[in-house]
Image (cartoon, rainbow, N blue to C red; front, side, top):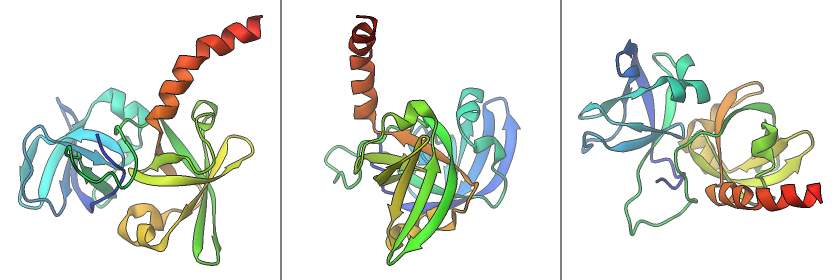
Length: 202
């Protein structure tokens, strides 16, 4: 489990197809990793396979590749990193599982006074989980929904600190991003779905 507070921006040094999946070697600031540890890489929970001072490897299997942009990553790609939270840690963001729900597309970006606005195009199933001022995760970063937009869109207001300390500051129109909806919203939607369906039938 994660909080969506990125604590490092790593760089992919090597990509290779292996029996374990698409393996990535990522340079980072971490010097005390453990084998089998979970790390959110642009919001996708991956497992540390090998590691050393300032680097680790992980692999993405075909089901992960199907749901993410990882298949397109190459040497030099910068990625947001977050280690799994410990019990007792401050929950500065929100509860994040590291399970990417959809790959969204940046509709447009704009600056309004001191805010940088980013509009995303979501799939209908993920858009219906969004509420104004609710939480979502974009490329592993915990963000707040600034506004709901027509046609399954959502607007984010990104502060200067987040722009500087994550990869989000480099987003531009047309870029793909990983999105994870709030897990609480997903559970509520699942629980009420039968009641809503029954109401429609009646």
